Length: 312
Image 1 (cartoon, one colour):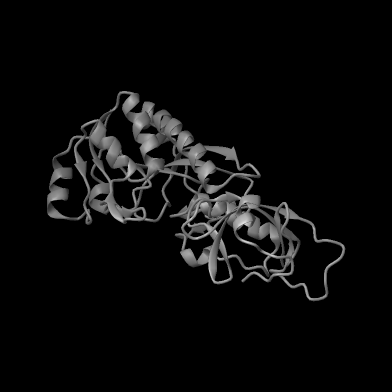
Image 2 (tube, rainbow, N blue to C red; image 1 turned 60 degrees about the horizontal axis):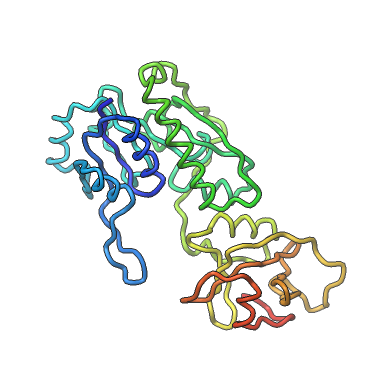
């Protein structure tokens, strides 16, 4: 099948690689402009761009999909369908209505739950027990289109956004190939999304990453997994921002000092145990500014956090 692919990050690159390996003809690849990355903040190509260049595919990185030259190219293209995965730009109606079979989106949630930009983060943060991938016929609304195919997976108790992302990327690649193999049939059999259970996965903001020790330990543990690896859950100690890479939930101890309030350090030997609004958070991996993420024993060897300290 001749198609256009639109996507930018690793999630999308996994799907594009599978599409190319299956022998589909990709007439062009659209991805977002290069962004600054790393400590030097140099302009870096995203995973989809790198893959497109590796295969010598025609590549577009417009900031505006309504630019006359883009619309003219689309008008003359003979592709049957667009495949879109984590592209990051809204497709205008001129594109949505252009290919004969429309535009198919690979979305990392079980719609209508977690429409929007950050479905993987939000599913973990909310404590969902399962998620999945939906292949959706795109329309003008935000992730509102009919569902062509959908498969679910279990969210494991220790899943982070990184581990769950990788499993969902592989699943998305598998499902889009199934959809393309019988695309006309699945389009005809598409089902409308339910009007019940709609949730929006808002884009992650860095200020959300700060740990509030008044929250229950179970909520903080989910927050840490949801924000791993990025932007990284964090707290402040002695004017330093400390990132947390791994934590577990413990029951509240039977005895607490009268002065103990949420944020109180109960143990800082083999691990770091912090009193929360409900239960204790056992932290096992931490990172100082400019350093690496370390096991807690290595971290504490270079940064003392005495019992009785109060974390901000």
